[in-house]
Image 1 (cartoon, helix red, strand yellow):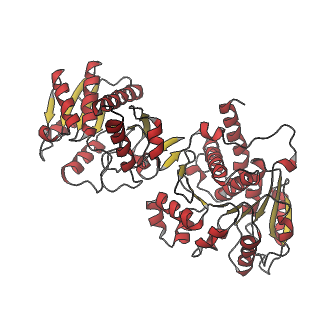
Image 2: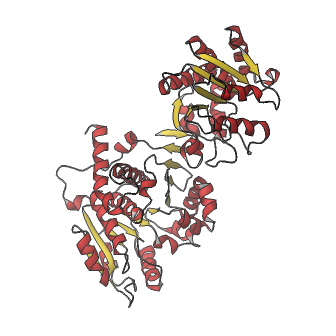
Image 3: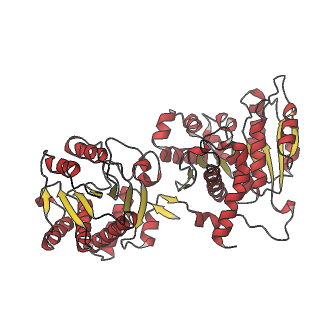
Length: 517
């Protein structure tokens, strides 16, 4: 897994490497420039003319060093310095001198007159690529004035852009877009990913992201990581193992508690995904009128009748406790409802069931305002809220959660003592200690009714097979997202949730092939 560091952690890793380990800052800058040039050439191999926009800090120093390497490699380099040369950082100032020493002509734009930039972007000799080396990672306010105008000029120009570290206008630590921001096609980040590269909406302005090794030891980066970016090779190692002499009793027994009348599809899709995810046995507890729906939709699952009221909704838990001794995990919530009977049933689960538990949908809504009560559970708990549900759990507006899903997931995990799967594009998995994993699969093709129910069954099946809750959530989220990507090849608008269980099997096969066994 790739470490994800915020501004402070990346600065500390840089400082430690230079001051404590004795690696010269100029060496790190040279490595950054080399990696930037390699990424640019690989992405646009036919590009010959490169316009580089440099600021006063070390980000600008990276651009100055890259200009020298590009010129040495035969590119036509046009270098604009949007700062007084006298105020550059020491390493940037050194690279400015080196650039001049190899004969590079540098245009200094120190003031509000942007005519030099406008001429470059509107004249007959358009650059093939623009390098954005204006600002570093630590912006803490929206751009205004001259830099905002520069960003607007760059964004209105139909020329590909490679951003150094982060696109100008973003903060490395934030997933938000505070104001005017360069819309990059490629972003070269040095040493590690940052939240803005991984999480929306900021990641949407980064384009493709290339992580460049500049010489900071991996152990230093790992020590400072606040989150981890999950890749296929990581998930391949986390899949549950299936012994060749195993039988259905070897692979867990998941109980799905769900599905009031009219919402039996939610229970059925959770059950079908649990079967596809390898649960040896699946039992679905639904109100009596819903039993035929589940029996017909998921032939592999057993059913358990819950008492129903006159509307076909759950009227209580009945004798559900008699099933607890036979199951190894419970997933509750899809289509369950939030009436009095459903609340009595949930109380039974929380008080009587001590094993692995996944709470989704209505089961989450019923603990809104009392999230801390889950911290007393003896068994592992996973919560799978979408932004609206996460907002209700925390007493926050949905738009506040969307603006900083990372913080919201961490807070919910801390309060509940549970693993929180904050669903959405780039789903976030947070544990109570503040550790975070960011899922790399999935997109808008999963934005359809029932998709979340499939994920509930997936994670529940993994926990029923004795995977710890973090591992179960990482595997489940990756498979779910990849299933959506595979389905997009057939359903270009949205993948029907009922198709996802079969696609989960295809995603699983990819991982087995990836791992080679």
